Amino acid sequence: MLSSELARVTETSFGCGRHLDGISQHGYHFAVTSDSSSRRSSATIRPTYADRGSGHYDILLTLMCVVVILSNIGGSKGVQLGPITTDGGFFLFPLAYVMGDITTEIYGIKAARRAIVMGFICAILSVLCFWAIIALPGFTDPYSVAHDAALEMSLGPLWQMVLAGACGFLAGQFTNSVIMVRLKAKWLERGLVGRLMGSTGAGEAVDTVIFCAIAAPVVGITSFGQWCNYAFFGFLWKTLVEYACIPITTRIIAWIKKREPTYQERLAAAQH
Image (cartoon, rainbow, N blue to C red; front, side, top):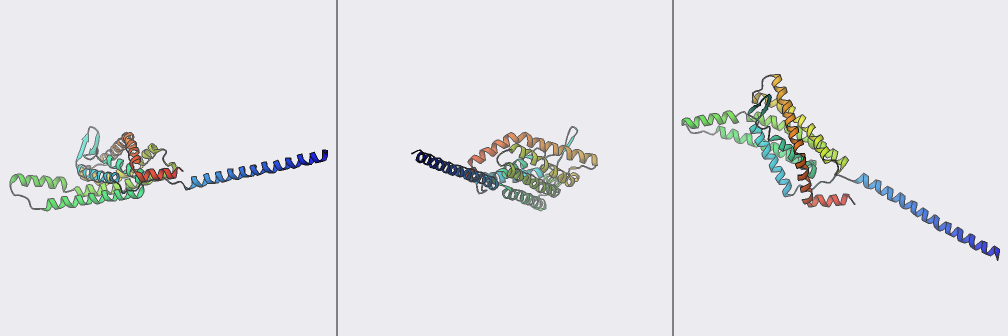
């Protein structure tokens, strides 16, 4: 009787042990599977971007092209603001970088590249149009002759400004966009302000040096001291304007992200 009871208790104990061991094994297996899945998920997460086939992208592209053209026209006038030497496009050009930041953050590097190239093409097209307008024969009355001479003087050297703007814009915007996408690949949806500030500083530095090196003679800058003043204050102004616009830029980015269906779909898929 006693031996039978001991046998029953022993069998029960071992059975329970096997059962608990099974639970432990399954629990361990679950923990490993969960951990490995988490690692796989982290490894396969990609930054979210929307398709560019939307009205929001079209608006950003159009605004960028218009700002680039107007900046090149305004840049042909030298401006002296107290001790600061600049040009007539100083208040416009930072907006092109704001458009570039928004485009890159929401639509990615390919969409940004398309916008940058289109800005370059529009700038070249504007030069060809102004060249054709100047070349057309005008009226011969004194007013028309004076008007045509002023038009040729103001828009004639524009090709140099466009060359300066295009080279600086291409190099600076590509630098800006590459930094934006690399930081987003690292931080995903976090750290937007840091991405905007970091990419802006680098992009504007590259842009300003290239632009000022080519555009300085057109503006009327002849000495190295004037050039340093022109480049330094140009970089400082454009960077500070973009930094000042960051609160607005982040709100625009958030607003467009919420209204881009493809962005929201991919963001939801990435988070699950």
